[in-house]
Image (cartoon, rainbow, N blue to C red; front, top):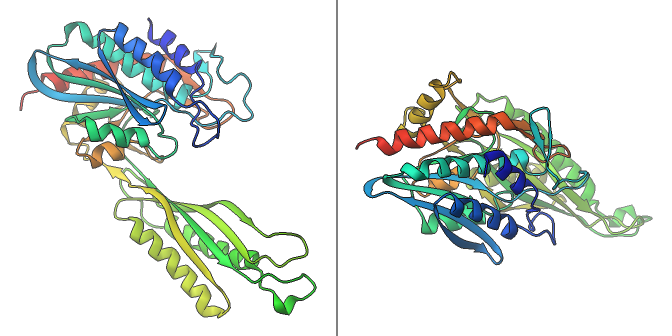
Length: 378
C-alpha cells in the first residue's frame, strides 16, 4: 500500500476521542487499520490497552545484531468534528489531503508506518518500534501506558512541524478557580454577594498576569508562558444573586515552572483580592498538567535528524513548538525525543489538511534518520 493510500484509509476512520466528545468511537477501528499496514509490511504487531476499548498499536522490528532501539511515535485520536462537512471523507485538492486528523496527526502516522515498512526488508541491527498511541488529545493515556511496557534509546514523534526539527515545546496546567458568593433575592442586595462579579475581579487579575508572563524573556525552544480563561459558569436564575462561579483556565508553562509554581501564583492573586476585600472568597485547584520539554540540539538524535534534513537541502536548524506533545512523556521515561512531521493547516479547525508532498518527504527523512542511528556505534 502506498503512503498516500494509507493516509486516506486512516483519515476515513472516525477516531474522535471520547473523552472530548462523549459517545465518540475512539481509536479501536483506526488501530486495526494501522495494525494491518504494519503486519503487511513485515512488522510484528502488539496491541496494548491504554483504556477499555482504546488500544495502542506497536509495530516491532528486531534485527539479528544488537544495536540501538529507535521509536517512531504518533497518536491515532482526533478532536471533534463540529462544523465540518464530511470530515471522514478524504479529499485531495491542490496537493493537499483534507479531512479530520489529516494534519493532526494521521499524516505523521502514515509517514512513520511507511518508513518502517521501507526499512523492514533490510533491517538487521537493533530494534525499531512504531508506536501508534491513544488519547493524546486529552490525557495521553496511550503514551503513559506505552512507556510502562516499552522503552527506546531515541524517539521521533511525528507531530506536524512543517518538516522542521523541533527539540522543545511548552507544557500546560489546567486549573479550576471558584469564587463563593451568597445567594439572595435580587431585590435584597444587602443580603447577597455576587460570585460572578467576584470572578470578574479574578479575570482582570489573570489578564494582567498574562501580560506580565508574555513580557518575560522567551525560554529557548519554548517561547513565553501564558494563560487564558477557557470555560466559565455561574448563577442559578435571573432573580437570584449567584453564590458560586466556576472558571476553568489554562496556563502554558516553560522550563522551570511546575505545578507548585502555577498554583502559588494563582493563590497569591486570590490572597491579594481577599486582602483588598474581606468578603471576597475564592479558591483554586489543579485539574491536570503536563510538563514542558527541551532536548539539547547537539544530542545524538537531533544531530542525526539534522544530517538527514541537510542531505536533502532542507532547513536543519532546531526550532520549538508552541503546543504540547507526547514527547514530554517519552522523555520523562528516559527516552530522548524530538518532533518531526509534515506540514499543513487547520488542526482543530473546521478545515484541516496535510501537504501530501510533505508526508512523502517526512517518510524519507525518517528512513534515513533511523538508518543513521541504527548504524551508529557506541
